[in-house]
Length: 109
Image 1 (spheres, rainbow, N blue to C red):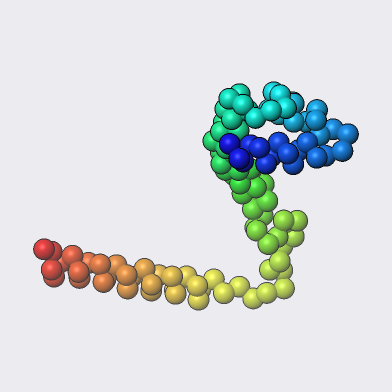
Image 2: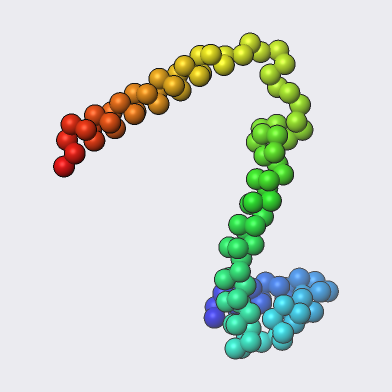
């Protein structure tokens, strides 16, 4: 109840459009059952709106990389380290597989 009251008071303090904004959002100026229903519905739907905006952000901004939104190739003057990283990742995978297999085969219970 107090959250809707605070929001109503904050919105009504906006010059010229405050009263109209409060009546448009809450359906009236006072905090009653209809106001609380809208307030709770807004708080229920807000996480889903944020999740949708995060997905849109991931879809569009991270399409070319999180630190490269313009899509310019940042590696044009660098030496590729592909063999090093490939061997390093393969070695880590094999070591982890060896540990898990030895754990599962030597002490199955």
